[in-house]
Length: 560
Image 1 (cartoon, rainbow, N blue to C red):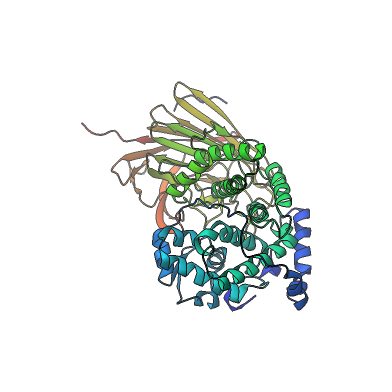
Image 2: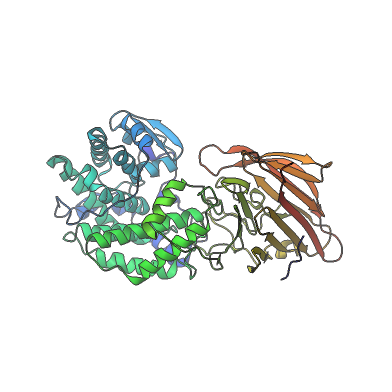
C-alpha cells in the first residue's frame, strides 16, 4: 500500500398527529408541535369550518409551471384503476381509492400528495385528463374539510404545490362545478396552512411549506398576502437549513435532491410571475446542484447514505438540467460531511461527517466512515439502504457490534459524543482521504481512523483502518456488496473475488484481520430488500494502543 500521510378509516393504519415524537426536536419546533396539538379540538369543531370559509376564487392569476416529467407507465396504471405508489400497489375503481381502509403510511402520503398528477400528464390524452379530474373531485368530496391525517401541514403543502403546478393540465378547462369545488378545497387548505405552517418541522417539510405559500401568493394574490410571508420563510430556511458548501443540513442525498427540486420550483414560479429571483436563492440552487452531482455514482443514481435510495437517474438528470445545466462539482463537501475519490471510471464516496443537528436527523443513520464504490455503471461496495440504520448495515468499521450513535425509535439519533473530520490530499492523478471519528471513545475508549487511496486509472483502491485504544475489543469491517455482485473466497480465505455482472473481477485482499462472507440485504431501489452478500474483516484489538487493518480492492487483470 502506498505511504499515507496525515382521522378516518383510510388513516387508521398509522399514527395521527397526536403521536408525533418530540425527542431530539429543538425547543422552538417542539413548541410549534405542542401548539398544533392543543388546537386539534378547534380544528375538529364546526367553528373551524366557519373560519376556513372565505371569498371564493375561480381562476389563477398565474399558473406556476411544473416542468418535471412523470412516469407514463404509472400514469397508465392509475388510468386503469391501479395505484403503484411508494412501492405498494392498490386497486380501486372510479374514485373509491379515497375510501380505502388500511393504507400504509407511505402509500397514504404519496396518494394524498397528488404528485402522481405528473404521471397522468405525461401519459397525456383526454382520458388521462378526465381521470385526474375524477380523482381530484373525489378527494374534494371526502377530504375537502379539515381531516386529521390528510390535512397534516407537510402534506397540505405538497398537495397545494401539486395542484397549482398541474392546474393547466386538469382544471383550467374543467366545467364550472369541478372548478368551484377545486377552488373551495384549495383555499380552505391554504387558510389552514397560513395558521399551522410552523408545525411542519421535518427537514424538507419547511421548504415544502415555503414553496406552497410562494406559489399560492403568485397564483392567488387576492385571497391573502402569502408571497411576502413565503419569501421571508424561504430566506430563513436558506440561512438556517443549508450549509456553507451548499448541502442541506440533513446530510441525506435524497433530501438534497428534494430540496433542489423545491428551490427550482420556487424560482420557476417567481420567473413566471415576472418577479425578481433573489440572489441567495440562485446561489443556493447553483451550489446544491453541485452537491447532487457529487453524491451520484457512475450509474447516475445516488449514494446510499442517511436513508437515501438510488432514485431514478433520468429524473436527477432532468432536475440538474433545469437547475444549472453545467453545474460545477466541488472537490469535497467539508460541511455536509462527504469526500469523493474519482479516477478513470471508478468512484468512491465516503461519509466523513458527524450526526445531523437536532431536527435535521429524522432519516439519519449510524454510518460514520462508511463508503461506497462503483466501477463504471456497476456498484460494487454499497450501504444497505433505507431499511437498516445501524452501523453494521454500512460499509464501515464497527466496534463490539455496537452502533456508533444511538438510534431513536421512529427516526433520529441520540447525540453522539465525539468529533469527526477528514483531510484530503491529491497528487499525480491519485487521491487520498484521511478521516476519523471518536464516537466509540466514551463506551470503549476506541478512536477510529480510515484512510482511502485511489490510484490513477481507478483500478486500485486501498484502505487502512486503525483502531486506537485498549486491547481485547472485538471489531468488524463490513463491505456490503450490491446484489448483482458474485463473491467467493480465494487463497484459503485470504482474499475475496468479486465478480461484476459485466464480467469484470475485483479482488479484495487484507492483512491484520480474518476474512469471511456473510449474508446481507440491499434496499437501494425501494420495495422488498434484495438478498445480497458482504465481506467481513474481523479481529480483536491488540496490545500497543493501535491496531491496523490494511486492505486493497484491485481490478483483476485480463489474462492474455
